Amino acid sequence: MEFVRLLTPEWLEISAEFYRSTPKFKNEFNRLSVNICFQFTAEPDWGIDKDLTYGAFVEKGELLRLEFFSEQDAKSESEFILSATPQEWKKILRKENKFITDFMLGRITLPHGSKPGILKVAPHANSFVDALTSVEIKYPDEMSQDELEEYRDYVQSFRSELGV
Image 1 (spheres, rainbow, N blue to C red):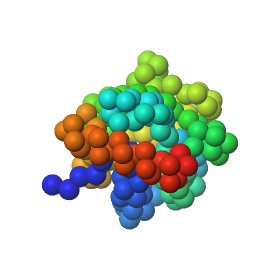
Image 2 (cartoon, helix red, strand yellow; image 1 turned 180 degrees about the horizontal axis):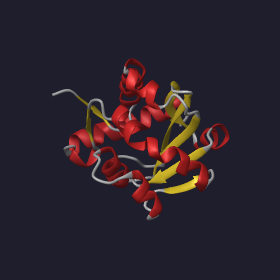
Image 3 (cartoon, rainbow, N blue to C red; image 1 turned 90 degrees about the horizontal axis):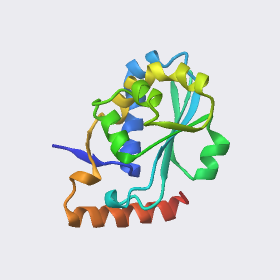
Image 4 (tube, rainbow, N blue to C red; image 1 turned 135 degrees about the vertical axis):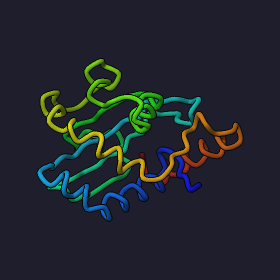
């Protein structure tokens, strides 16, 4: 079975391709224009030594960008930054938890942006998760120790290369 590792450029590329090639997303998001970032807080046991942020920029349903951002760029270019632990994001991506519930319970925080604004975007969360999970995701807590070390090295390498 094909899989991609979480929080890698490949994951974002596959997700962006799937979004752009699936008419349901453009139709569902046709009234949505938002620049939003998702921050995974540092979790060394997952190979994430520093917070890691990616963002999705959508204009009337068109996905303009799905890429990693530095903390400074996320703050200056996005309307919202949502932050949670990798374990919490995993539950969202696996659809074990619902975004709106976890946001209201404080498991997902909003370090940048307005709460009323994010609540207008929240109804689209499940569809966006569908785009991000078009391929099976291998999560760091499911990797062998050797795979995890290789993943950690890879994350450090692309972060350095991308300046994120």
